[in-house]
Image (cartoon, rainbow, N blue to C red; front, side):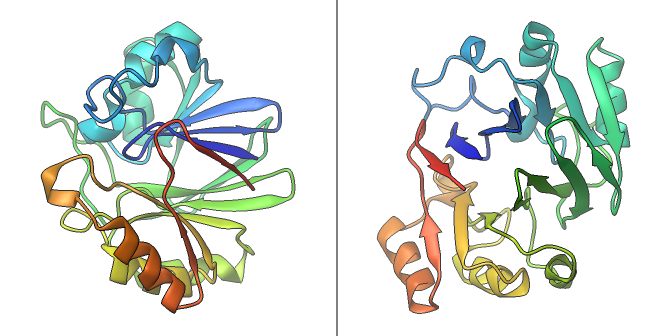
Length: 226
C-alpha cells in the first residue's frame, strides 16, 4: 500500500489496484502551492471523514472529473448523490467489502457541517484493510476510549492521526491514541495548514520517540509504503 500526502488531511492511497483519495482539500490549501494538480489524481474512490470545508473542498470537482465513488456517512453520501456523484453510504460500526479491500467506519469525536451550515452527519474515521495490511485513518477527532476497541479486531500496520491540536488531538493525546490502538507507527496529519495548528516538527517527533514510537511527517507529495 502506497500512501502519498497531499497536504493537510488529504491522502492518496494506492492499494488493490485502485486509487483512494481521502478528504481532498487541495485547491484551497496555500501550502500545496502548485505541487499537486487535482486533474492528475484520478481516484476510483473518495473517502470523506466529515463535512468540514478543509476535508471536502475538492470532492465535487474531482468526483465529477474522475467518476469516483464517494464513501462516507449517510448524510454526506446523500449530499453528493444529489449533486450527481456516485456514492456509497456507511455509518458507525459498519463494514463493507469493496474491490480494493474492506472499509470499516469507526467513531470520531468532532463536529460535521458543510460550509453553508448544512448538517453533515456524525464524523468518523476508517479502518482500511487491503493487501494483508490494516490502516486506521482517524479523521478529525479528540482522544476517545473508542480507540481501544480497534486492536480487539485489527492488528494495525499504521495509524494516521491528527496532531495539530486546537481543533483535534495534539501530539500528547496522539501518543496516548497510539497506545489505545496499539500501533507504534504513526503518520501525522492535520497540522501546519493554519496558524491554529502549527506544530514544532522536531519536538513532536522526539516526543513520540521518547515513548518508543515513530512519528512520520511527510512533505506534500511525499510517500510511504506499508
